[in-house]
Image (cartoon, rainbow, N blue to C red):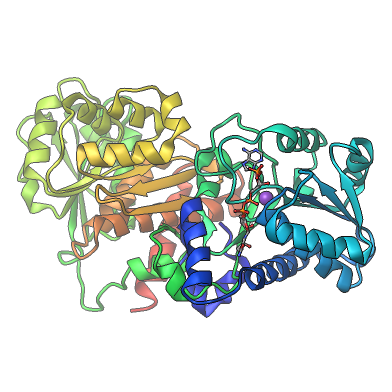
Length: 514
Ligand SMILES: NC(=O)C1=CN([C@@H]2O[C@H](COP(=O)(O)OP(=O)(O)OC[C@H]3O[C@@H](n4cnc5c(N)ncnc54)[C@H](OP(=O)(O)O)[C@@H]3O)[C@@H](O)[C@H]2O)[C@@H](O)CC1
Ligand SMILES: [K+]
């Protein structure tokens, strides 16, 4: 998520970039009203004003900019109607409201009455379909207040008809979703009706449902908007973390100024075999870039000479898959990139028994899915949806249907921290801690990018002071940052182009502050 204007807000920084599910959002609202006595209509007034301010900050509309407000029947519509009133009192004159649901209730009904008395144009989507679509087609911006956290199940009826008709216009960049694009809720699935937006202004704490990979594609840019919930109400409700710069700084302490190569830890990388040596080289180099003081690459004897001739800072050992050499002397290990699986099951088992801390990826994950065993020690698994499906013995489709649930299940079943990689990656621990890392960078989908990620996290783990959850969250977030920098500088890039950026970022966060 872009942290936008929220970045400078001290209070939000203190709270972190928290995400809540719909029930959590309702609970914060309830606590704010019942325990702290803040009236619901004040909260809604704040929401409408702050969301309208955020919209103005993004698009700079003027008095003659045609705006259309789509209103459902609940408080999400209430927010949109407060925005319409705000626009009117600030001098906007081309305003139309399209009622998608005939009966508004509660505060929405009250604000509908107000805009009616102010003389704003109000159309019924059902009874005045053609005029409604005409206004929508002619609008510069369409504010979506059909459903928010009160959605239950997939959108139905006139709401579904309306979002489908608007989507057909192909104007998602003009749609501004209030709190969430209508149709997105905690149980959103690919194929459900949803109004695709170019900008989502989500009441802080933003909704975790927006970052479900299937939903994220319909949200455009996401900005959190503070509306005045008391910090105590936000803290009282459990939530997830969305990684951003402030969250990273909390998790990634500077290197001690007197640290040196042995103190910074030694990472053993078990990777690389004929045909896939590059994966091992990338993972090993990334471990060094992640901060390990020393890195040893144990690669197949058949590729040893080639590996050794290409590596300078990384030590390379030929290794034919028999007894691993003192794995306990390494502070972290990385198992799997381009390693191969034939004949590796026995030694994989030994490595799991003798190593305490590491990252398992690629072929390591295939070997792990063969064992079906819960791990002991501190392990991070970095599957993509296909690998995740093998770990759970199900189809990739089932993983994509419920990625958050899948990450939780792998984490529980294998007793490990799991990073399920996608355009939004989900990090999960067996005890339920969850962080999401927003990616949305298709250029990251390039061969070797995953090898670098697992090596990089392995290098971070060589610092035994770092908690594996924090190391994985930091590693994945920096990997995404490096991808963004590479895309901006080089356009389409190769995985190895990420390495220099990763080094720079680690320096920025761990060196300059020390
Ligand atoms: N203090 C406050 O009040 C604050 C409130 N806030 C705002 O309130 C929002 C939550 O409001 P909410 O709980 O009223 O629900 P909301 O999202 O408007 O949805 C209800 C409407 O959707 C409809 N509907 C439901 N399911 C449907 C389906 N499958 N298919 C079709 N329709 C469906 C449902 O219809 P019904 O079931 O009643 O027939 C009803 O019309 C939240 O997102 C935020 O924007 C914030 O500003 C914070 C302060
Ligand atoms: K909405």
